[in-house]
View (cartoon, rainbow, N blue to C red):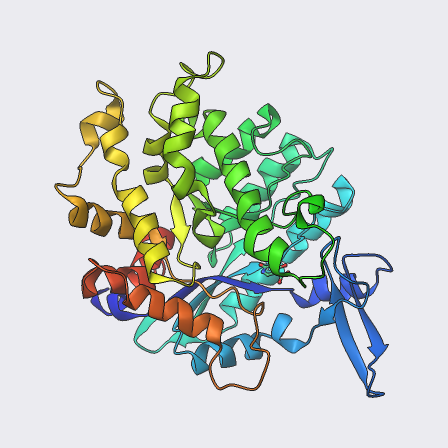
Amino acid sequence: MAAAHRLLVDIHTHVYLPRYAAFLRSRSSAPRIFTRTSPEGKQEDRLLILDDEPSEGRPVGPQYWDRDEKLKFMDRHAIDVSVVSSANPWLDFLPAPDAHKLAEELNTDMEDYCSAGPSLTALPSAKRLYGFGLLPLVPGASADSLVSTVVQISKLPHLKGIIMGTRGLGKGLDDDALEPVWGALEKAGLVVFLHPHYGVDKDAWGAKDNGHVLPLALGFPFETTVATTRLILSGVLDRYPSLRLLLAHSGGALPALSSRLSSCIEHDPVVASRLTHDARYYLGRLYFDAVAYGAEELGFVSDAIGRADKYVTAGTSAAASGAGATDSVAQRRLGSGRMLFGTDHPFFPPLGETEKWKSVVENLEAIDGVWGWTEKEKDAVRGGNAFSLFSLGS
Ligand code: 5CU
């Protein structure tokens, strides 16, 4: 598996599988795909997914659903392997029985999408495409239907995890009703990719037209920050010590706020004695994509992850196994072991014609520029960590 250490793996890359795209076309309200006549008189497909998006939506095309387009994008950016996930809003808007049926159909479709794709020339035991499955996480879904879908996904060899939003069954991810789901995901060894869709209250954005900037740059990451914090506070990471959670957009503001979170917990009579460890410990239990577009931000996230072992409560089993870092550079290098390259394709296309997408180039340059990471850590973030986390090629 030595070859795997130099490969580029994109773990944050989306698709609307053809069945899902066809379903969006059949709808008359968001989320939907529709065809309109452009101001230049041409027929064009448009996508409307966000609640506060202008009604004309945005351009959409085969880059969202065609596997060959995904592979062309990968080739253009020298991406060897992609771990592809369905894009938001997944099944969130459907009644429970419909969500269950469509989830299972889309999981089979995702398996076919990956297995029918090419193998990796440098490592023929691996494919170029792997995927995340979907659970019917909607209000009214039964624990049985969710657990049975986890079991379905665990039997599909090219699906390595699931992608989920932050709403759970309508009450968020700290809902006790999700306990059987966390247990089943932990048992199946599936990675949970936690991804935003709703942002935060749009009143926060004011009256000026700033395009999608505020909901995407701030709303998405704040949503992830809140959802992950609620998960930590609910003790899920204590109860399911082998559950593997991957956070979109480098965990949003959680790394920057984790000491404040810790202090707020320590001073709160309701929560002070609830968790086994200091809040900062749990950052070392999570995985973070490296979709932050800046070297300083990646370095900071790796610092926050790498210091986690300092916050293990003495006398616990985690304390016994904590490896620990000896200094701040060692800490930063240690943290890089939980960070993974991503692109967010097909979102963030360049506004003008370019050979390579700026969003991809910036994320690669950011990895390359992190102070204190050696080539070993950079290679790991570019692909080695993904090979280990997802057991690719085995
Ligand atoms: O541009 C956007 O709206 C998005 C989105 O909806 N989902 C995503 O993953 N990235 C960007």
